[in-house]
Amino acid sequence: MRALLRALAVCAVTVAAGGAPAQVLDFEALDGWTDDDHLEALAVFRQTCDLLKDPEWKPLCKVAAEADDSPEAAREFFEIFFKPVQVGDPPALFTGYYEPELEGSPFRTPRFAWPIYARPPELPDGTPWLTRSEIDSGLLSGRGLEIAWLDDPVEVFFLQVQGSGRIRMPDGRVLRVGYAGKNGHPYVSVGKEMVRRGLLRIEEASAQAIRAWVRMNPAQGQALLSLNPSYVFFRKLPSLAADKGPIGAMGRSITTLRSIAVDPLFTPLGAPVWVEKDGYRPLRRLFVAQDTGGAIKGMQRADIFYGTGHRAGEVAGEVKDGGRMMVLLPIDLAFATLPEN
Image (cartoon, rainbow, N blue to C red; front, side, top):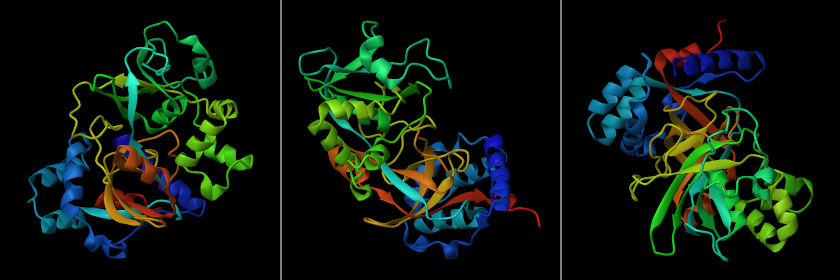
């Protein structure tokens, strides 16, 4: 984490030379700051704070653990020990993600015919391996890697985009699965390609619209999905309680409308992040950077976790909004992001 935080400071200096400097702000400059539930945000920050071992964070985590459980004390904690830093220039790009709830089977049946796979033992880290098309052609079949079978190849694709899910078996048992690795190929946006081809207008390119189009055009749709070579493998999470969120990149459960996925090159995992999302259903609230995503790249970029189930998926799938985001850094680190005069 120390290297990551230092990289953030170096990056801010580099970007400043290119015309997009980091800015250290006051809390008064944050729209809606005083109206948020800071105690709720503090509780989420505490959930992963013990993972921040660097000297700049460790004492703050101790204070956070001992802070009074009152809204006033929580707000004072953030205002006393942190400074908001805007890295890069708005507008930000905010999208949404969620934990799907799907129907499935532990065995292949005429209805449940599309597998999700466990990570193959020979899969290399960070090196391109088999593509989505190659895997979908059946190259992994018969090896016992199938965790579950779903009834829709489109849902297999979007389960991989989300990175976690709950699969209800025919006997009512619910299997929770989480991210276990990927095939090393870059994520390619199917929505952008559909817009480029004139299949959807840019304002229509939501997850729901992509699903509907692919289902109405199965052959063309499957070919479109295959344009994204990235493929995600899963693991079973038998000990994850039903009332807990899915596991994020920090190895802990994430929290509805308090956890975001970020690019850790610019936003350190575990840091509080103030989000000002515009558009439909605007948000002004404090999140914690507790996850990452293959499509989440850049300085002013975040994916907001909207929860579990169909309704959460409908809301998350519509989010593609601007605004701005500010990472809250310990004061010394905040000023270290500024270039020297």
